[in-house]
Image 1 (cartoon, rainbow, N blue to C red):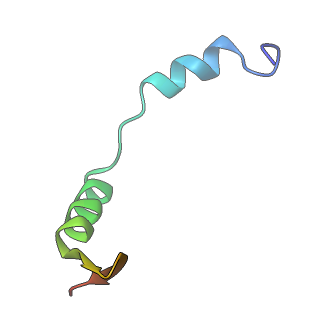
Image 2 (cartoon, rainbow, N blue to C red; image 1 turned 180 degrees about the horizontal axis):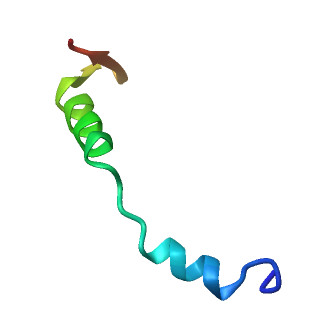
Image 3 (cartoon, rainbow, N blue to C red; image 1 turned 30 degrees about the vertical axis):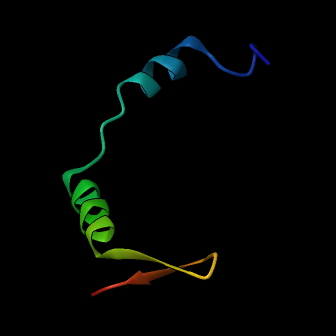
Amino acid sequence: MAKIYSENSINKMNNLEPKEETVNFLLSYSKALSVIDCNKMKFEALLN
């Protein structure tokens, strides 16, 4: 398994940074998501 991954690819993975638009999308999605508990069941609703 160690032969599959090189040190260069591991170093590149440590420097990953998301784009600002990706962060904004995830934040707005999480703000719009609502989870409703009803009789031991959970319903997810996206409130746009």
